[in-house]
Length: 453
Image (cartoon, rainbow, N blue to C red; front, top):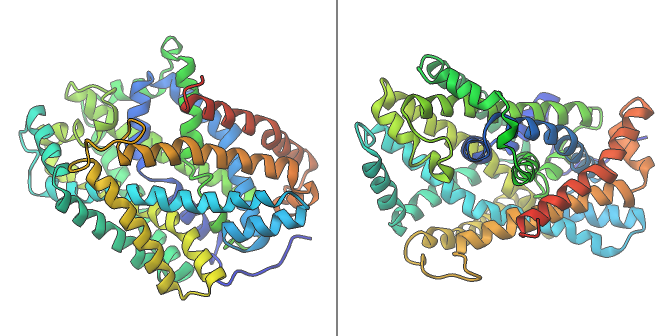
């Protein structure tokens, strides 16, 4: 019989609420900013096909595993791993997996908030017509001028962090759940509206074919590992968010079904972003492989020259800001939950302390683009270093350890109780993927990002 413990933070009111929240955690800048530009850099359709396969074989099993860990204990990630390590009679060092997830969430939020602040600022820039009839040189100057001002970046970083904390401080039902009930439908609605416009452009079918017509001649070993890494990171795995959201999930809700729905919704948003962005890129003769600058340096050129560009530019950056907000509340929740559970803090005090740490750490990212741009450690700016530590080291290690813990350390009977897959064959398939496929895949990603492969 599955455990019937209760979390002190409250539970999601329904499966739909959990799906919205977990999808909101997964859907973020990685879908709308990163996925299109890495797809463009890796040849399009063939890369997308590999990415979808990786989501199915790696992302979903790991999401099920992390959700299961949280629900079994009804605790924050740190306490979860301490309890489950003791339950399994395992080496006590396994509990550091919880600490790493919480730390990764705060560290990611610190720079995520800065980039999200750019998105928010660009809503205003699009609204005031800054991109109207601007050529690439002018758009580049707008971006360079924006990031060169530390006070301006600090303002937008602070504004976004405050918005995040105002939601999280209200708790699970009144804060997180209510926010995603409005934000996620708004996100989908605005993206469908943008897709409607993209379908009217002359480059729509070029964009569609680029995204969905595989050309395997453009697929390299590096592309496969990049797709594998994106499939893992896009679902917010290894940073404590899924685990803590799982701890708020009622025991009568299927982890497997919800994980599949969440992965499908997250993938849908990523593909939708591609269907919105690539037609604009091809219509205006821009380059799909523009890299990270695709959103802030390339797309504004299209918005500045197309009919209705003012309106659709505003909509696009609002979508980007909403996606960032739904992820940011998930990034800080594990730290807040731990402070409440282990330190006895009120939710207000926990949010203030965790938020201040993330905000102060974010100043390093702010300064990386201006007054500290020449300050480097291991040949990386502060922003590059913290991004590398989290995305390239902490998250792959976290994902690998979650797979190993669930597949080899945790008692299979306990996993089977929580997952409740109905048929033994499904549980055996999940165990096969978690024990062998996911660890190997994540290990290969890790070797790739550290330059071994």
